[in-house]
Image: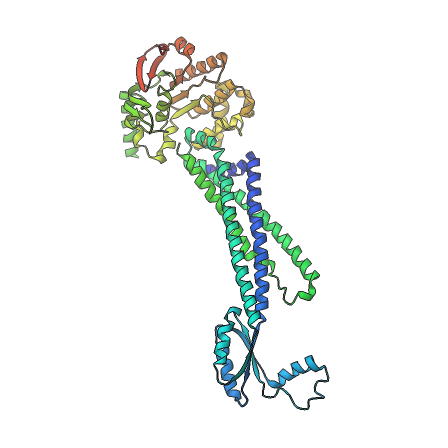
Length: 299
Length: 247
């Protein structure tokens, strides 16, 4: 193929968009609407999931030791806890540190006056944070089996509620995203197919004159890719602006909840959204136009 | 290179012996109904002007589709410009079709492009340099009497003018054969005659012209070779023939 033919087909791809401006607009609007809805739901679901994860990360199990357990043994047990898969972080809290935290919370700044000695003496502990709250039961059972462990404090209700919520959000968001993606793929590929099918006559004419399959197909494919690209870029731009605005608004409005309302950054959202939107938009534009044109090439 | 030259020579000698179009005992059946063509044999020589006439269902359209290699014969052989169309692979069809100019009853123009672009398109397909396209297109438009309308959109033209654009497009690549399927079917008598005169001029220039038509007046007046078809078979083939009535 000569270079001028390549340039001609590229020019025709661009020109087709303007020649069939209503089809182009309808296709771009359909792709944009689908991907906007998909992106919006993904952003909401990803943030909900992240908030629950943040709360989960704050759930801890406290392990107390029998009196007389040596420091060395406690350190050994600490290392064993730290190596468990259920554990994300483990902190040793000596009885003095515990009293220094607990005392002021319950007895005010002068807490030491009524207690010449540390009432929590002998209550050294480990504060254990979980990597996955649904694994709390397994960890607690294991901790309780250690002879030197006097007590394990944990909240079954919190763990179960968070674990359930997390599962629910994961399933619901996965379901919605899969359905939306399927609907988007169906709608976009149909729009591309209909847009090309109404120009079946044009393809027939080209073939009768003696155009090669490449010569007929290339402008349509380029047109499909460009429409897909625009259809993906518009919702990405919209979501970017909307997300930035919503993030600023929510952080300003709910400052008191900022400790657990931990939103994902725009970069984190777009690290997933950009490739998926581009693949869906451009990919369907590309594959849809190739397969639809192919149907009409056997003239 | 030598192999190509030998092939070309072989094709040329085939054409000298059997004509630019040669059908040998060709039948075409579709999945339902009677065969559209039944044992058709014919030969059309270089530079001939031939009318193919017959009523609906006589097999004229099937014949044109076979010549364009849009369809393949169920049995028998179809040769166009020495090419055995049954042996033509899908990839070879575009190059083969560039030997043919085609004109249809409904013009089949690219309506989103102007007159110039419609004609130039046929040249772009065969990768003609831009300079030559700019020279050839105005020249062929002048031949069909549309020199002043090259910027017009095809929808702004009359039926006769649209058919002239189709003719210009069919001729711009200097085809050896011009196939015209009911070229006057959508035209008034004056425009019909103008188109037929153009076809005659084209034929005088050496191009083989095959016209499928219903137009009795034109067929009878032009005194050319007439092949009459009925129910998929050739019922008459006459030099300087006329339109034979169904009854």
